[in-house]
Image (cartoon, rainbow, N blue to C red):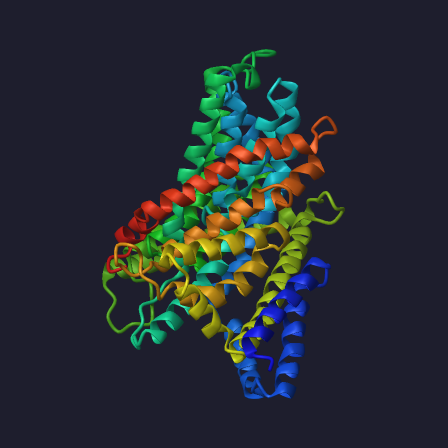
Length: 538
């Protein structure tokens, strides 16, 4: 007799096969699930009553305020891409480090980290740095595998360094999984985990990866200096004042934006959704300023007003509908109203300029960004809806119990269970995008893993698990022969760069990623220390 567990495995295999065949993700997940729900109903091993929970699941997605951050972060990233921030950063970082052996490779890593912390869009970062840096590095005599590996690895830092879309979606899924795990353990007043926690937990591991990349590059330069030569000065050298003026011009705006977005989240001033709104407006103002810097005063005033509003919000209660308001609070409320006017003028100026400025695709920048945001956001949310149907049917077949028993009965306990799940996600990352993996695998395995004990007897941290999964997904993006980042780079690399050069160059960085996962296993505090400091009681 056919069992529910057997149908679960077949359903999972059919869904993956359809995805590999190129069928749309959302309709594949939902359609395959419905077909197998019908088969299970006919065989008497699936209750159609499970499907009655689907509308409320979709309604929950629509009412989820955390997920509103997704289109806002996407808008921010696309707008920064259109404003040529990466080009200026790469150019000036090359000037700063170019006179050092391996300087261009260091610059690529640093710019990759800055772009990850300001845009979080992997494909755009890899393509941009591949177009701008790879030809220069090859022309300067850099070893092709080193150049390709540095660009591909640095471009994927957007997977792990906040504000990453991966972390937003992963945090939403882990929040539900953590509560389900606690309910299963008989805890009916469960703790919660938020996207804020995941952002805080990812910060140190993300920059640890940057440090490990640069350490590898330094070692390469020491052992094979001819593969990463210093760049000789060409043309008329810049004066020290002009050089630092250019550096400040290229670095100040992205750093201010990063501090405003991440600082407001980690400091508890704003939720990820509110901070994403700040980031979207800030990116638009930056783009508007870059379009016409000679008339940038209204936008600079608007940016200063935004900073002033953030400071006032952190120091005063600005709600006017209260019975008792002190004189200082009234002054702060009036100041906030004035600052809001200045901010509104700067924002409207930026929107008008991005509306008038043509984009590369022939439309104006604002319309191009809005269209790209709509396309990506629609894709994300329709995948969420399809994945919810898949999860409901999987649970209806009691697949969650099957996974729980399988992982708990593995020899070696928690370590083996983690290794099996990470291996499955790693292999799936060859063929599927992170969205499919997050919405298919995480809801199934995370509630089970979060019930397991760590080797020291402590309970498993959902933040630690989320960071391990995020780094693992980033690693699969890099691994030959199917890593998505390698395809992005291959598409923009010069003809002189062979595919084997890209594969050879990425292998050391994949080993660094695996080493980082091992470090996190033995030193989980790297992921959990900052959340515990920022959010006491975490």
